[in-house]
Image (spheres, rainbow, N blue to C red):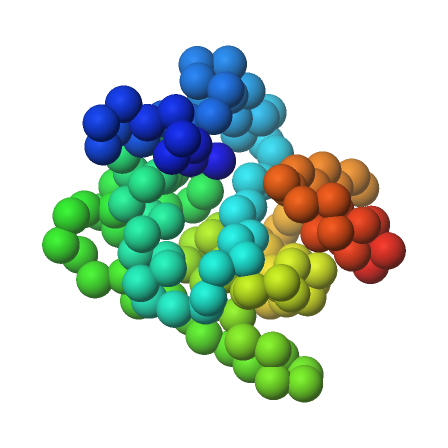
Length: 141
């Protein structure tokens, strides 16, 4: 998570600093699939901003975004879907924008975007700054 309150000038920092960066790297190296499901609006601008922040922090590859995808000036072209009930989801690699439909976004990713050779996850770790989102994810899974 990018902590704008801890920013120095306009510089973005990863909340938790080096420890968070190291933990993400270690999880990725251990074969853990990392996803970001943001509650922001599913739009090109949302994902462009997210890719820019991940690139700035040097962690874009941990979320399936190649260095070429993250180049400044390269248009971000997410996939858009409307799930049952018209729930909009935008996705670029392992980054999804879904408003407050996080359980539905995860289910969509598991069914439609996860690598075919990947076994179904046996564990799910969900981190969020809102307990409501954590409860809704827990109730879904």
